[in-house]
Amino acid sequence: MVRFFLFFFLFEIGTASAQKQLLTDSILIEGHYRLFHFLKPPKPNSSVIFILHGSGGNGQGARVGVNKLEEKVDEENLLLVYPDGYKRFWNECRKTANTTANLENINENAFFSEMITYFSKKYLINTKQVFVIGTSGGGHMAYKLALTMPEKLRAITALIANLPDTNNLDCPEKKLAIPVMIVNGTSDTVNPYEGGEVITGNISMGFVRSTERTFQYWAKLAGYTKKPVKELLPDIDPNDHKTIERYTYKEKGKPEVTLLKVIGGKHDYPNDINVYLEAWSFFKRQLNP
Image (cartoon, rainbow, N blue to C red; front, side, top):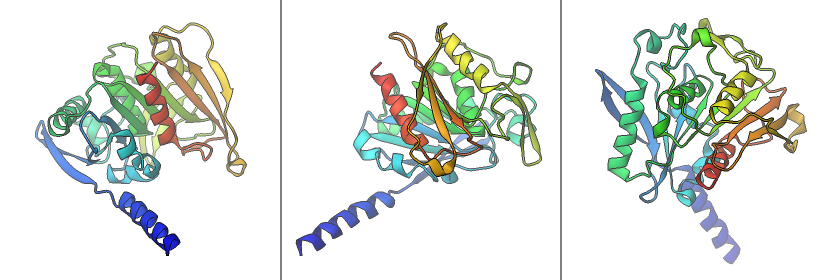
């Protein structure tokens, strides 16, 4: 009977966690209602994490794979936000991208600024602990926010995304150092590790820099001049034929800049780590440098 009760109790906890309600609201930005979905934090002074979908996706679809981080909402006092891009795309910094969001020059900075204000008023968030995790096109949007409004962010993580090449970059750069973590695969044919043209379906997004150039952009902005510390992560799943090398710039008084180089990684996530938990660990390190 005791064992049955314990099983039932744990089942109820797991079920409640799995069914945590996703709320939806919208903000009117320059004539467009912009939607966002979120999980309410357990108490005030929460950290906010914007989780940004890739090109062609949507906010609710971006929840796939985030369940382990969602399980930490109560424990870590997190407010997770899943915004929708404009007609499934972001107006990021790739000048030649021929998406509707880019062609109409949608004001993304206003959207994110207003969301921060919304959550500040409604849930009394900690505005000093606003983070961004973006995948692919969402990674480019994370880069844009770090380039153009870094004063409103504590750190970002960009997954399978490189900065636009210099002739394909149309964002004004504030050039303020900010903690950045990058997770890129060496065999990625969509976001080429060594740089080149990015094509999504039949849509060209123009040329991007190599991962090394992207990594060095943020490292030099933070004032690093020496080589990063290299570490080989445990190969927990040898069947995925991927291994991960971590390169870290970290000095007291400077923002941490880290690259996870996924050897054999494609336009996907490695199995050896949970990229969202890894991002949260990175973010937490920036709160206690």
